Length: 369
Image (cartoon, rainbow, N blue to C red; front, side, top):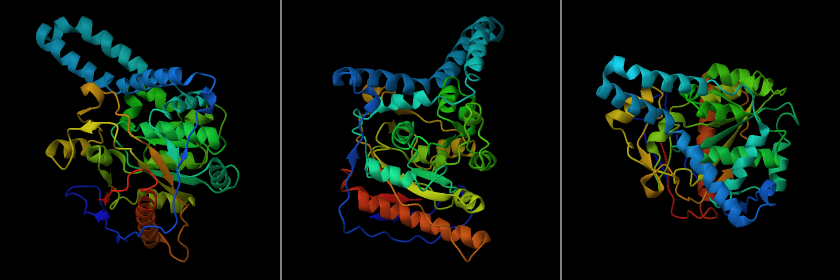
């Protein structure tokens, strides 16, 4: 049930790792429902209402930049370049200011996504006690940093906000920092929200510094993080995201494994069932538009949810967290990277197969590209 595909021509692969085949586990897995403990004082109907309002406002933020660009083009065409300045210039000044707001993390902001637990029937394969036990192996409880590597990316990664709420609720001291595409750091409002969640650009330089404790959003709040959360498939997985499909793009990606070995930070594989079920996607596959945006590192696509609007579909979201991967011993350099990369893909495939029935997706098939 695990399909392996070669990366597309012109993709980001540097070399191909051998692809092991996963076998289903014999023991039954269980997913534990997540409870919005910080919002239980609110009646459930009101919780759901407030949850939907906040999530719609959140997803609408992703439409601000493309809508503003389209509006600017229309105004310029109708009024001409000089005649449109009085309209277009103030708009982009406001957008520029909005893209610069936020310089430090806001721990209280993480709790808002607890309001989304019930909307998406959010659950985790670890009990709260098991989550605490896993967290006890990570910085700052030990000197061992962790890299939480999650798939799939999805179009708008709502599950990353769910993870932030979950980690803050069950492992607040382990909460580290996240990584987003560099272009997000120039998007109005979205940049502010990601900084509040302690995110930095997903470049190797920034990730390395973050694992060493140099993370401005956290540092500005008086905190030194040591663990990384990242959607490992990156922008490439935006263009494979569609309901009913489970596709991860990681065969040719070795940077995270290289970072793990260099920083001696163990990788924890995570797969989110339902992570591609929030929106329908127009630009899937390997068409020329998808390839162009991927090379530009822009996660730009045409998508829709309920009522043909950017309102997410109520996908059932289950987060499967695997065991930390041991860093290869007795080897070094690219050989160690290759070995860890193969181990990572094997662990992800096994985690998927072992968890899909309990997650409510018994017929799901994982495709690894």
